[in-house]
Image (cartoon, rainbow, N blue to C red):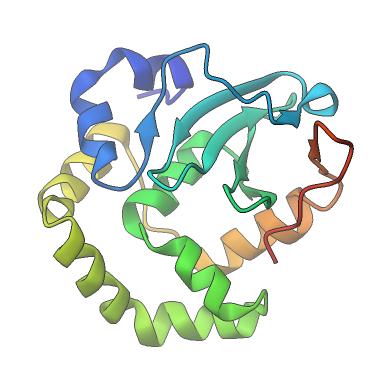
Length: 177
């Protein structure tokens, strides 16, 4: 299945399952007037998190940008498919990134050594993850990345190295690390 913002919006079953992973697919248009996107065209918001974070597809490569409700922004995946690989396999990915402090070795250690703890917490909050994960993997053709920490770190540090998002007042949003 080709994964685009449009295909996600059109499939209610997939949208409903993704909600368990804190990935709420949004209908267009969606208000993002608190930051400027002029330098990121084309730009389209795909989903949001309960905390107010926004996932968007931008630019000619259609990379995925996360804009946090705390004033941070950064590229988290090369494609929407890679983003969903991350969100479905590691719904707690943002907590792991924060705990790592941006250090790749530490992020890999956290994925290897602490994943079970994060998984337990995620399942306590959203037990339907256990049921929906294999369905989404099958239906969307998702994969478990061989090195999820390396892929995420690469997206944040390399793919997003030249991406800066600005508040309407002209100040740059903070990087994710």
